[in-house]
Image 1 (cartoon, rainbow, N blue to C red):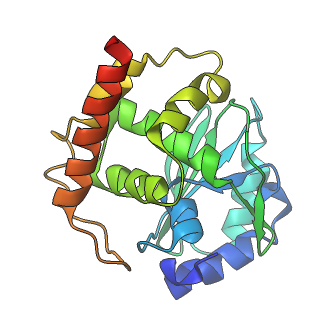
Image 2 (tube, rainbow, N blue to C red):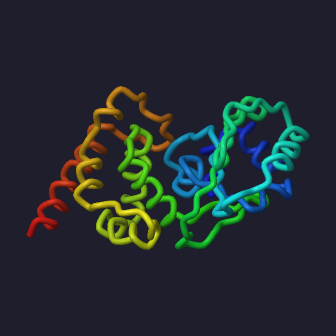
Length: 211
């Protein structure tokens, strides 16, 4: 794990969260988990997921309240957004199977890179932000191919249809991403290079799809 991707105050908070029994059903995913795996950028938010249809919100809130200064930003079925000591935490119900093994960090389960990659591809299919493209680009540089990930989508999301042509169009659409700031990178990366990679890959895969 590349701990330098998390600021020291976020590392300390994650250590405290790992000691909470109510965190046990959750695993860390999203940009911070990807950054911990790959070490490419700084990430400051913590996104937690659980496959439990219903989890006890009140005990979780009580534990968080006792851990630091808690402010509830949003609370609805399946979603809880808070700030804890000025760090944004999100808790989501996410009823999809895990295909990869967890990693443990200070008692917190970290999702495996395959699951993180498929979740990131799904996010881009809905609305791709610049950090999403950057993260998926780094995942592809680490060994996974977009071919692999497209084939893995039905297993990860068995009850959702993600047409390949829709995902490929999303991979080459940067309308939402262009206005975003570049994430704080720990390894140099040019946005134009990221964009060119996905444009070329989407074109190649679309040609394969139409054959």
